[in-house]
Length: 151
Ligand code: SF4
Image 1 (cartoon, rainbow, N blue to C red):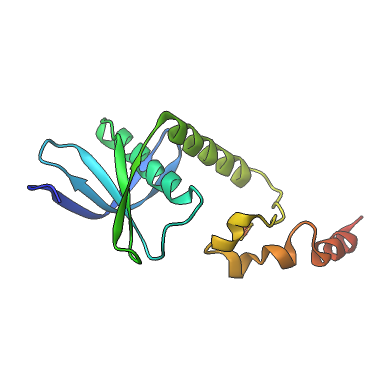
Image 2 (image 1 turned 30 degrees about the vertical axis):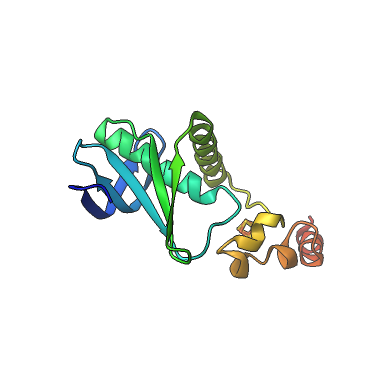
């Protein structure tokens, strides 16, 4: 830990530009005034980029709120007690903004898309609720529902 770092916990953040709001687990304010978000995760590192995108979205909010630039942050994995630094590259920023735009489009639409089972589902915290194998587009349940509601 860098000397003289101020820790801001559960900091509410927002972005008018992206239509986002949320809360940062921790934001470190360094002695030079720079900000460094840290996201806590209970499990081990996942192979997908969700954590990176979530942290990047927090950085985008902080940048807009404080009119600053945040080049990197970190995800702290409780299992390994390791901190993984993430650079907010142009590619990660673009991916994060596209994901946010896709999410807004989904929220604006009236259709609820069927779950589609992918490898990433195995690590998803919503797996038990979503049941993508049982209720997904190719499932028997989906086919029966389609028949039932066919007009
Ligand atoms: S389990 Fe459901 S919510 Fe999670 S990634 Fe798969 S389809 Fe998406």
